[in-house]
Amino acid sequence: MAEPISDIKRMEMSRQEKVEQDVQEVKEVVSANKESIVKGIELLSALEEADALEAATALTKKRKTLLNNVIKEIDKPKYTDALDTLPNLIFLLGDLDIEETRMLLQRLNNGLRETEGEKEQEETSYTDIVKSLKDPDINRSITLLLQFLKGMGKD
Image 1 (cartoon, rainbow, N blue to C red):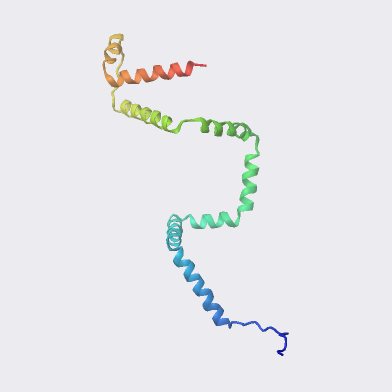
Image 2: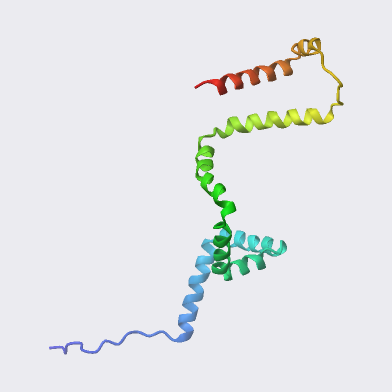
């Protein structure tokens, strides 16, 4: 009969074999994540070019001091009203229809650009206003304003 095994010897790797195994594992991970690593390096390069990498490093190292300073500043009475209205503002932004707001702001910008190029008229008469209603752009704008006023007046 055979003797029972009482002493188990683990197969031990030499330091060199362990290093080679680790290097191979790192190579496989780098190969699998090449695009992410390249993008990360590009991001670091862009931060370095903008001299923002040093600032980001300093902010990271001094984050506790920075956070304490920000909290002390925000805790001042002059910011109380702003902080009290901040949640309401966030909920308001959630209720806005972004696409409609974007279209309205684009139209507003177009109107502002139009006024920049125009020379000032001294006076506009009633007949000038009535004549301008024949212009489709003006008519469309007045209709839009009237619809806006009607919607704003509803309960």
